[in-house]
Image (cartoon, rainbow, N blue to C red; front, top):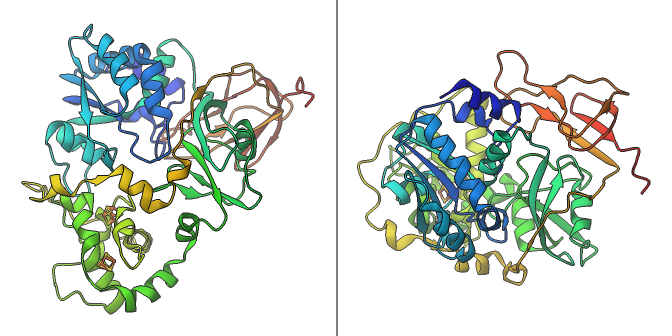
Length: 447
Ligand code: SF4
Ligand code: SF4
């Protein structure tokens, strides 16, 4: 890939906008046969990508075309659900101009946006166990990340973030906000909460995490905020300790294997059997010598196993725990097989999103959250986290008292490390610099 293009992406501080925040200049600095845009947005309630694809279709196609040219890929494919009618209509009208770009329509199942699942749906290629899409010649990129690439092509760096703010709020919206505003402020943009006792999920209801403190800042990879009553079963289940879950599993797990039946990674042919791992954790035996604790490394933590378990158990939580324990002991994933074929029943076991919403108890919050882009909104403070990406923490390049303007570099990638640059998201004065963050104060805001 031409260095100039990668440099533009690096300078813009782009990271995966919908997940762990992997630096995009590193991801795209590879040779791939296909670039797949992950427009599945399969987490219920979130509505960022589907609206961006509808409203910014030209920008998205231009950026994808550029990436295809730069990586020498054969094709760029936007994979999105058939139910995103407006996005499909707008993209379909414009994609014909691009010889190497096309659309792929996904069914409405969960997790269609698990990148290994998306790759299989689009190309019928199975990513090896413990592997990444590049192992089968594919780079998968998120929709908002692609929009940030388009901005970088026009020398605009990452300063803002699109968020769906929904659930028990007055006016569910999807809003473009400066990075570093507080969760509390973002919720106020949606008119505030409709209840006094609430909890907030950062991300989707399936894989999102419960926010401990609503004074924490929005980061480059925050995708959504879902406000729920404090006693909502979804919040309670996320908060449940692994010890309590395993105590219950010892007596309640009936080894029905429903969790394995729906497991998307098992259905891709990977050696992941959550029911057997539950048995192993409960009794230190599985009646199957081939099951090892290290199989947990194959789990994506999509959470679907919990939604089918009639006992309300959480195999994903066990897998997460096992991964942390094993990694803490320096043990790595030993499973590297490439399945020749998927599970025979895969097509019939795809889990419909509507059924999922009802099991999650969130149907009443399934309402439109239209996109709002008000660039003139002014915030008094932003708290810019120095760790908004995978890799090393960014190093401040400004001092307390400096005047900075929106888009100015304030923290850089440490030398020879994986990381991403960070820019000021508002005009103001650097008020504080700590180990964790940089605070910018907007002295023109009198609110
Ligand atoms: S679905 Fe629940 S009860 Fe059945 S095997 Fe899995 S964890 Fe056990
Ligand atoms: S969370 Fe459960 S369903 Fe999802 S990959 Fe892991 S074991 Fe399978």
